[in-house]
Image (cartoon, rainbow, N blue to C red; front, side, top):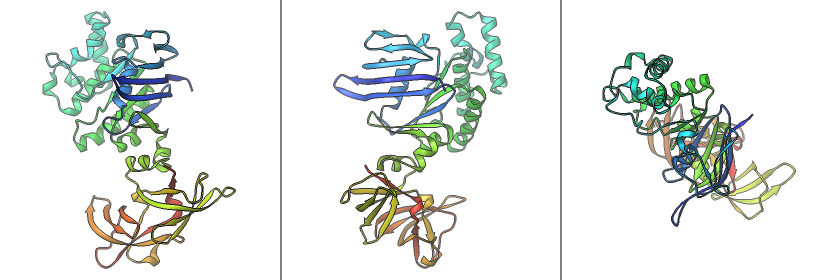
Length: 361
């Protein structure tokens, strides 16, 4: 597929403070990409560099085959000429303008006549099922309605890229779930190259085709959403994307033909797991997702081949369809998500090798 956005060695510093180390990547046309990470990791900074709201300290940025920033060539195309729609975290709607005029405002800046821009704004309102809100002011709208209006304003001039800076963070939990579904349907319908900034891994995994996990200004992991979740490459990725349980182990042997490592655990047990090459004697981490842990009332009910550990339950939290169980095992604290939990008597957790991932860092 054609690359819509390309970054080559893009860096950003504020004085002596480096915010982004050199980042090189490309984002395909029509894709939905999430920039995921904790506060301060550089994700919003990267979004602003793409938009032209801030300038890199070095490197090159291309959009739809054209260079919009180049440190070596001295090029820096202004934001208004990059044909990018941007939705801010606060929505940034003009409080003194009606919804119709808010949405039409980008066309007004581009010199479109009043009649034409209002026609385009009404068409966008109808497309997003917001026609009834045309004459209201932002303060008369709910959070979810403000979000949709902000997105309508970003789309009315037909941008080639849509950038979203945590657009769901101001919504309550129930509205956020509905908004995710609506946003996913809209992007699929428009097939518009979309980049979402979020700190919420559920939001990133459910919306995006591709997740780029950032950490301290660097790309920690980059790949399809399912890959980032199922096969994290580092302990940080495993913990941040889904809160995996991690166990420390020591490599006893590595079999290159089978691609397997025999790992000694702290309690004397042993696991043989698929692994990339690793030297005997090295310390590694093993990641297990909470939903992959088996919560048991008796060791005999574990899947064949599982390592079974006693669990001293510290908390049982009912979540509707599932229980979250937190407790300690001989290998440390573990968290499990399970449809059922023994309420009386001993509790065990089963760890199956198929559900484990070896992390080298």
